[in-house]
Length: 398
Image (cartoon, one colour):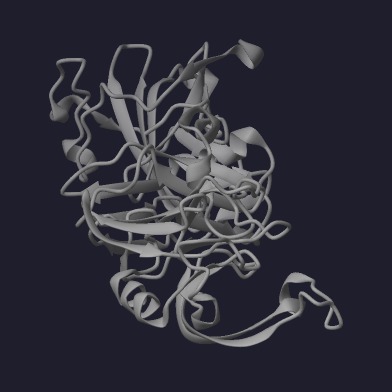
């Protein structure tokens, strides 16, 4: 190996306790009393506070003294090891994995001299705060959501390299209890990740998102900032199925049909998007204008309407809402500009029976497909293998 070093991970054969005098090399069969203090024989290139986290740690002993290093165990305050290489002649060790930002490290070194006498030394240092930190903002906000709500992670800096993305993914843990859900992260772009299960979240579950990256080197001089945490709950599985061909909307909760409404959806030229959408927000009142979707004010298609009981499903302005002006067409024809309209009474009922994260699925429309990203949460429109292809962990689902 280069420079006569051979690769070693953290040494497991040294049982070391806080007192150097009590340290024992557990794999050797020697007692703690036989270990000598090797502190005066071992040298380090890092010490004190303010060590550059990009530094390579080096441990050496004097060749002329006949001592050799038999092992180095380097860990941070959380017990996370630093990997390293030991020189073939045992006179030097160097770290091969990155240090973390603002972390305290302990080096436990074991040695042997020409007569076979074993020794031990302990050394501590602390790294400085990295100048370039990657902060992670998790979503959604804490609260109660439907089972279709994805988890989002927004990064403060772009991460493009696949290996660096893998570092980020491995440090973001998502769990659901009491029922576990198989899921995976997907990189939407170099600053945005979404996490979803293979199917929807279990109903009545607690979803917890926890980062374990604080100070870890992501790539180059970019280090992870403080670890965020997030917890939210899911309610019942509530799904609205809108059939544009039969002009109906069926609301199903935990497998039971609650109600079926006559509705109207997008007319030719303004067809409603097919596919799975997720409720983004509930707006008791909203002013809807044709200009908001690009219709000129002088067009015969222009409109300016006060709308009640609006449930938003895309950022571009698709809603499920009250449309008292089109009651005669509801259940009969599609006459809207892309929204799903129903009577005021029906819209009020649905508004109070749904929540953000609930599922809205449109079928049999002449429109295009809901985008996976960028216009709300269309994450569920990707097949599972397509979703896994957006992970930096080689398609391995967690």
